[in-house]
Image (cartoon, rainbow, N blue to C red; front, side, top):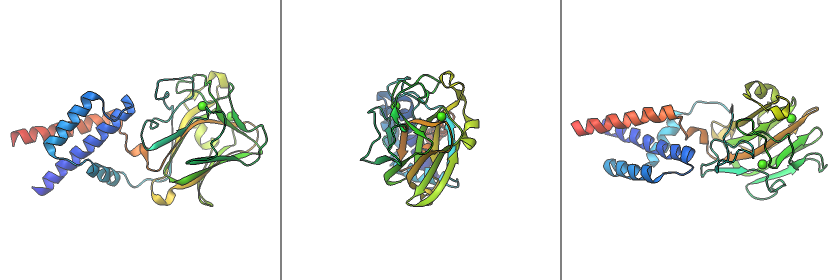
Length: 275
Ligand SMILES: [Ca+2]
Ligand SMILES: [Ca+2]
């Protein structure tokens, strides 16, 4: 009996957590008024502590290597489509985002940016080569550009599991390197990513654009330094960098998963009414 009860609690905990993350993703708020009322009634009925779901989620998704996924990204949290694509996870409280719209790179705070060489060619700028929006829209804001002979190092105040980046006008030789201190954890180049891009922006002559999500699967792969460099001709254009100490990709289920979890919750609810 205890095992059954624990399984029910675990399923409902997961449902509650995922409902919260669903609301963050689609309503840019942890709970809308209606969903908050429903959540409180469910919690009251089952007497549940939602922290249990965090542990359950972690157990359910563990064996995975350092990963790269490319999506189209989304509009800004306020629906603006002329500032490039943002991470689907940018609305989470655990995710920090840098949009470069101040006109320069941050040199203090959680993420400190520095150019290897202070030539004026690699810089924060605004022009037609800015990474596009999630549907290929022209980005009219400032973005980060790096060219051959230079690179940008991002030093982080603590190790993170997640880095997201609007990567635009993909050119051969764009390179990412992830470090833990001085130890290289992982490296990626255009060759790996460009074939995955589904946006081919007209303003970039058809070059690939997309939102890249880099995630470490365990603490051993966490990183605190990222180097963005350009090998050869062309430029490395990026915008809307997002960082998270935890892995946000594991906390936001797709709508289909939400429906499945809702079905589990409904089944348990019916069972309780009958029993
Ligand atoms: Ca920007
Ligand atoms: Ca480029």
